[in-house]
Length: 389
Figure 1: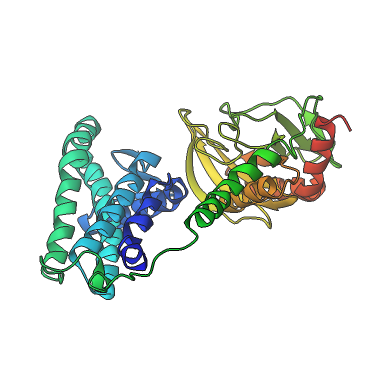
Figure 2: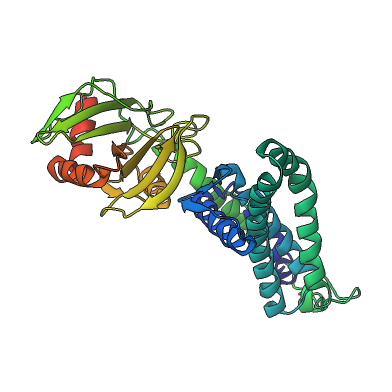
C-alpha cells in the first residue's frame, strides 16, 4: 500500500547506483585535481608549470591520469553518503548537507593525494612515491577520508534509535476494504510490464541496414590527399564500427591535417560510438588527454599528448541526423532511434593536426572543416556509400 511504498522510496531510489556511470566525470575531475595540486605545490613553494593535466617540475613531469581522477572513490563516497544520510538523518537539509560534504571532501582529498605524490617525489624519488601511492594513499588515506566525513556529520545526526524506518506513515491504519478485481488488475499490470520488451522485440531490427559497401574518404576543395605521416602513431579507437578510415590532407600552404571517420550501421552492446575507450585516446596507448579547447558548433575539441608529440582533435558525433560533441546527446539520440524505429546509423568524424609551436594546429583544422562542409552532410554521404546507394 501507499504507507509501505513511501517507506521503500529510498531503497528504490538507491538502485540508481547500480547504473554504471562516472566516466563522463573523468576529464573535469582530472583537470580539477591538477589545479588543486598546483595550488598546494604553490603553498609548499615547489616550482611547477601546468599544461592541461600535465604538471612540469624541475625534478620530473607528472600526469594526472584517468586513474588519478578519483572518480571511483567519489562515486563510492556519494553512494555511501546517500546511505548514511537516509539512516542517520531525518532533516532534509541535513541530509543534503551531508551528501554535499560527501561530494566535496573526496575531491579535495584527491587533490591532496596527487600533490602528496609529487611532493614525495621531490623529497625522495618518483619510484618511491609510486610505491607510497599504491600502499599508503590507495588503501589508508581514503579510509581516513571516509572516517573524517563520518566524524564531520556525527554530531549532527538527528535520527533516534527508536525512530520508525517507514517514516511517519507507518503508524497509519491500513485500509481494510477488500480488494476487488484482483485478476484483471494483475493481467493489466503484466501487460504494461511486457509492453516495453514486446516493442523492443518488434523494432529491434528496424533501422538496421548493413554497411557492406566500400567507403572512401571525401575529396575536399583546396586540400589534397597525401600519405599519412605522423610524429607519433595515432589512430582513434571505435570498437565495433562497420567502417573506420584514416587519411591525411594537405593544402597549398603546406598545412596538414588527419581525417578519421568511424561508421556504425546501428548501435548495441559492444558496438557503441560512445563508451569506454572509444574516441581520440585509445586506452593502453601512449596517448593521454590533456585538456579541452574551444569547441566548434556541433562538436568538441581537445588536446592529447604522447611522447614528444601532441595533437589537437576536433570531434563531431552525428546521430539522428544532428552533429554534436555531447556524449549524452548521442546516447539519447541512439535511444530515441531504437524506441521510435528510426534509422540508427551514426558517424564519428575527427579532424586533427599535430601541435607545432611555429604553426598552431587550430587554423588548419578550422580551415579544413570550413572546406569540408557541414558534418551532417558528410555523414550522410558516407552512410550512402556504405549502403551502396
